[in-house]
Image (cartoon, rainbow, N blue to C red; front, side):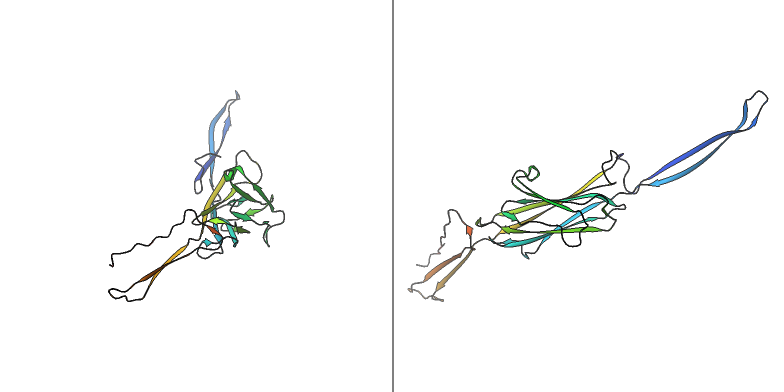
Length: 239
């Protein structure tokens, strides 16, 4: 694993054979000749990508809602990817349902979960999909996994819930001191809904000397928590 060996680099290797074409009476070789042959080895590498989506159209969620996440790990490189591992670090306010290997996955995919995982900063659930020995992602190929979460109930308004997915694979299968490891990661946020404020007045229009009544209506999403909430009107000088 030499740093300079990267995708697209060519390495020349020259073989040399030296020999004599005449031998004197004293056993000394004369008329030495040399022939050579050169071949080029082109370096190829896998290149990881990972894309994360979920089925909530606007990314605003409410407590108790179920969200389905989909992760697609791909190889945009020029050689097969080996020893694929996909992880996703999910915050505790997104309660992970039991994840499984999706239909069509190769036999032997192992799915595990770990809470308070160090790689989640001690504050989340780590889901890991480990692909079996012998499985490869060929160039332009990909694998996909899905899982469900339930949004915690209750939650504080305007909270941002981020999870981070990562794919890791290597240039050759197994543990080899000369292999190279490749990673790609992506973040995805969903947001807890905000309250809405609507202000109305009656009558409309209002004439001079007439009393106008203003109404402030605050709608708070179900099971969303607010602290120190205060609704206050701002009145122009009508009198």
